[in-house]
Image (tube, rainbow, N blue to C red; front, top):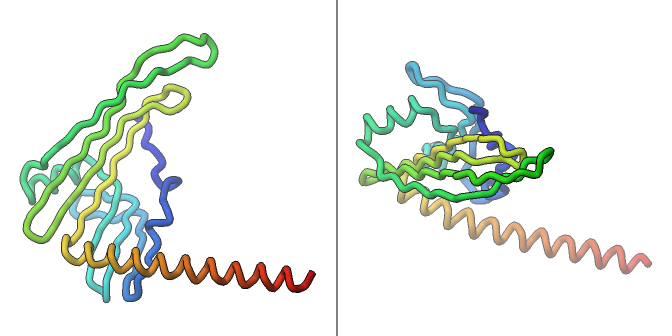
Length: 169
C-alpha cells in the first residue's frame, strides 16, 4: 500500500508565532527497534510539550503497551470512482480511524487514513500527536494571539507600502 505524502499538506498552523517556542524537525529517529519518521518536536523554554510524527504499527503497539488500549472511532465514507478510460463507476469505502490514549497529563492522538486518489488508487497514511495537555493548551492560546498580532502588523505594513506606492504616482 503506498504511503500518502503528508509533507505536502503541512499548513501554516505549524508556524510558531509565540515567543519562547521552537520546533525541531527530524526526518527519522529510532527508539529501540521502532523507527519513527517525519518528527516535529515542539519546545517551550527548552521543555518538550508536543511530538508529532508519522504513525507506524510498531509505534501504535508501543503506545498501547504504555497507555493501554486506545479509545477508537472509525468514520466511513462511500465515494464513487470513475475510471478514466472506460468511464465505468465503482463505489469504494474510505476509512478514517481516530485512536486516543490519555492519562492525567498526556494525550496521544492518532489518525489513520485509507482513501482513494483521483485515479481510484488506494492510499494510506497515519499521523500521531503526543502532548502535555495543560502546557500545549497554553501554547495554543499564546500562539493564536501572537499569530493574530503578526498578521495585523503584516496587513498594516502592506497598507503602508501601498500608500507609499500610490503617493509616488
